[in-house]
Length: 190
Image 1 (cartoon, rainbow, N blue to C red):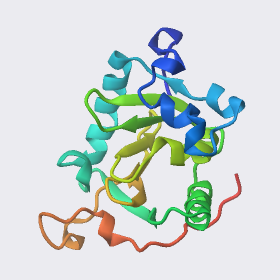
Image 2: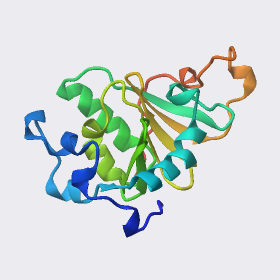
Image 3: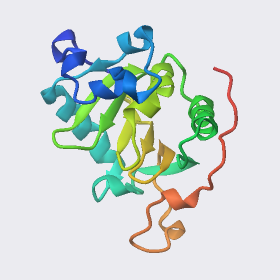
């Protein structure tokens, strides 16, 4: 579940990343149906959502998981730019235990933060338009029981609520992400 009202929305044309979604010179662009399911939030609501979620998920800015709150469950490499790499990442995202109709926030670490609301299915269809290497994007709902973190390097991680036991962290700089191997999650029926 995500919470926002109509007054929290801005026109899609005012969304800072609108060009990523509508510029035909970028190649495949999302369908009109997918675009209609992307709801950009205004600056005030974006900051509220970003502070509510992303700041609780990551330590030292966007570079490490807050291991006192979350642990990494699965990691997927986002390296490569051919169709096979994108399909592998798409399958990883679709295989995560998130219902396709689940409403989520998609936040981007920048100043000011940029946030849109959509459903998980639409995010998985448009993730390559919403994330570039070196971008930092977090996807979560109001429960903050889970989150998918993309970047800033070319990886994605599924994090779930629950601290990483301190004895598993080798040193104070451990991210918690390096505790899982890059492998697909177990398939679930959705």
